Image: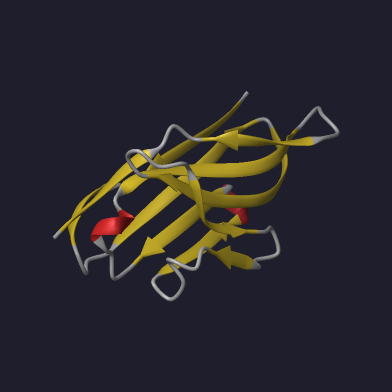
Length: 121
C-alpha cells in the first residue's frame, strides 16, 4: 500500500512564502514524475508543477518565477517552495506521484489528501 502525505500548508499574507512537502511511503518500486496540483473553491483541479526523476520540471504559467518544485529521490519526497504568494493562490494543494508498486510491472497515479493554503490580502 502506498501513501502520499502532504504538509506545510497554512495561512499566509499576500507576498509571503510557504513550503509544501509530500512524502511517499509504502512498497514503492520506482517513482517517475511527482507533482503538485491545486483546487480552488468552485474551480477544477489544475496542475501547478511537476518534476521528473531526472529533475526536469514543468510549471503552470501562473506560478512561473514564484514557485519552485524540487525532489529528494532518496526520501521519495517532493517539495514546493512558494514565494510572492497571491490571494489567487488560495486552494487545496494535492501531491501526485506516478509510481510503480514494488511487485508490479506498471505505474499508476497516486494522490495525497491535500493541504490547504490560504493567502490573505
